[in-house]
Image (tube, one colour):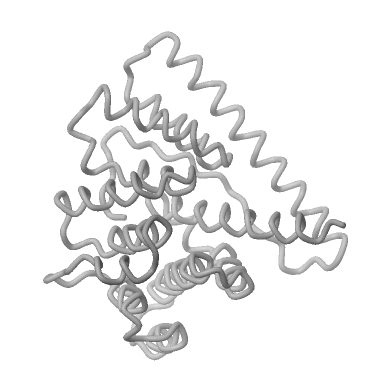
Length: 259
C-alpha cells in the first residue's frame, strides 16, 4: 500500500528461500534462515520494549515493535501495538492499513474489513486496500457478500492491482493476469514488481478460497521474488505477509500429515 506513516521505520530483514539446495540440505538451510530471522526479530522486540518503558507514548517505538511482532507471527501483539499508535495519535486511525492486516491474521475479520473500509476514505485510488477488504469480508461474511461489496474505483491505479481486483469479480483468470505481465512493454524491474504482487495476491486469493495447493505455489513464487524485500517499506511488509502465509500453509500440511 502506498501510504507510509511518518513514524514508520520498517524493519527489513534479509531472508530468502534457497532454491539450489536439494532434500535435507534445503530443509536445513531454510531452518537456519528462519532461526536467524527469529533471532533478529526477538532482538528488535526486546530493544523497543525497553524504549517503550522509557518513553511509553512514543508512536514510532510501537510501530517498530508492532512490525517485529507481526513478522514473528505474533499477530495479536502486533494489533495491540498498532492500537497504541492510534490511541496516542488518533489521526492515524483511517490510514493504518497495517492494523487491518494484523487484525486479519489475528482472526478478527470484521475489524479488518472495517479498517480497510475507512482507509478508502483516506485513499480512494489504492486497489490494494480493496483487495484486503475483499479478503476480510470473504472470511467474515462469505465470498458472495464480499463480491457484492467490492469497493468501486473511478481513478486509475498501478498494475497489477486493477487486474487482480477484476479477479474477485471473476472477470479475469490468474493465467490472464500473468500473461498480461509477460506481454507488457515494461522494464525488467517493473516486470518483477508486477509478478511479485500478482503471485502474492493470486496465492492469497487461493488460500482464502481453500485451495492451499495453488496458494502455496503462487506464494512461494512471490516470496522467491527478489524485488519485494529489496524495495523497502510497504513492499517489504507485503513480502513478509507472503512469507508468513506460506509458512502457515506449510505448517498446516505438516500437522495434517501426523498420525
